[in-house]
Image 1: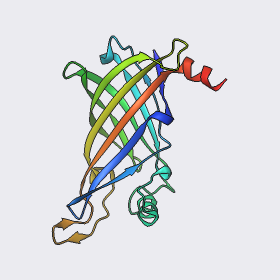
Image 2: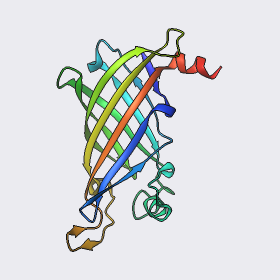
Image 3: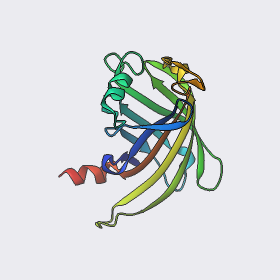
Image 4: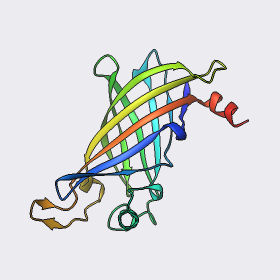
Length: 182
């Protein structure tokens, strides 16, 4: 069954350590995605996620501008981050290892994502609709994707090399989503 992420109920965040102590989070509110998912056979799923980088927000306009600049995401030349799955394997009861291609700044590399299918249930707003709930997380070394800007600080570096990407998604079937627009 084909599903699409509900943008009003989906969040995507990236986090990194600042000065090696505090965690700074950036969210991407304009993210979209689709998933081909049979809830009875999640191992057959295929997912594609598209993150418009210019939509990023960190609650600091100067930091946001710096993250959009050529020092980091270079949104003028690379407007999207994408992830497309290649395989899904069950790790535990409702946890899966998803291998896919992650593209950042025009560089595509394999990424391993841990995903949980939290459930598929009736939509509380009725009309027989269903909703799927998915959480996913991966950690990457940002330098592998050309995100190399940094500054030394006594504790190490200003921005950690390791970035955590987290997705909490709610999806509806494509047919249901289309009928909601009407």
